Image 1: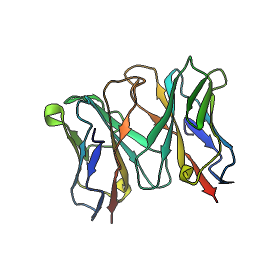
Image 2 (image 1 turned 30 degrees about the vertical axis):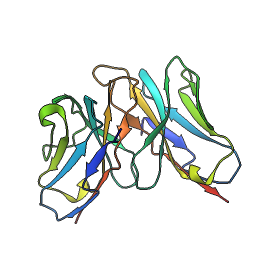
Image 3 (image 1 turned 135 degrees about the vertical axis):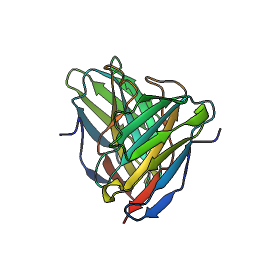
Image 4 (image 1 turned 90 degrees about the vertical axis):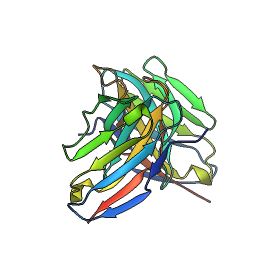
Length: 115
Length: 114
């Protein structure tokens, strides 16, 4: 079982609508949790980085939340645009031993925004 | 500031051949990481360099994979001999510092072993 699970696997929404993507993780203890956006054929691009003590972080129309007690995070996208179509990946960095720089990736949620 | 670059963008080789992937990190970034995504799976960590030293190579799948970073600048990842299961997209990332600092990813090299 993957240490970082995301839902839904895929999502289709209409342009202008909002959506929320979910991430559940079992990595413990963890140093930080990140959300990345990956366009087709490109490398992942960081959207937000939250430490275990932060519970929300915004980047424009993207807002990430973190509940370290329940080990859940969400990414909310407001007023979606066609350019938001991409894979959104939840990533957790462990805080044990020498593994603090290793990133553990979820499988991603594939978002399609339709006109 | 130029981003992380990777070469080649695509490589198709036959089983048993050797392939070398190259990564040029962002200038001034001491930390360099290699990751891999195989078909249908999540991206997985392979190893982490700090300058020319291997800090963590716990994700390297086996001894057919050899990563180097001579001089602490660019890095190479050699697969020898390649097997079918090595097919996937290999990503390189770099960061100025470790911990909660952002890792900047390259576009990846798509490797196909036939």
